[in-house]
Image (tube, rainbow, N blue to C red; front, side, top):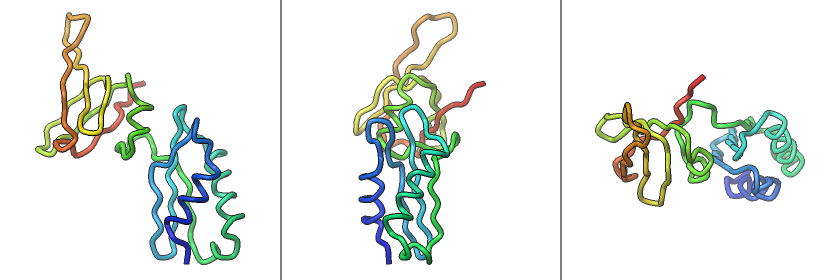
Length: 145
């Protein structure tokens, strides 16, 4: 059996930590899912490198598992602090526990709170809104094309 800790160790060793980070690793029954992201994004070739690294390290032990190495996707909620760092200065949508949504520019964050700049029409600078993480259900990047 392959443990989550073993997968974390192998991925962490093979990951260029200056450019990439682990979002999530799941090991359940016969399924291993590794979700990675990068400060400048991550592409399929980089995911394939980690896939090959895991196959090389675990060898035949991996034969009974389905292995998935992927990015979190554009619509996924933020799960780790590195995603907040990566998206500082970008527009995000915050879903609060009470169902309300707040959109704004992610200015900063701490372990306990987010600081969003909410633009107001006809003003050059917006107001800063402090949102505590214990009020937050999810945070996602707002996509604009």
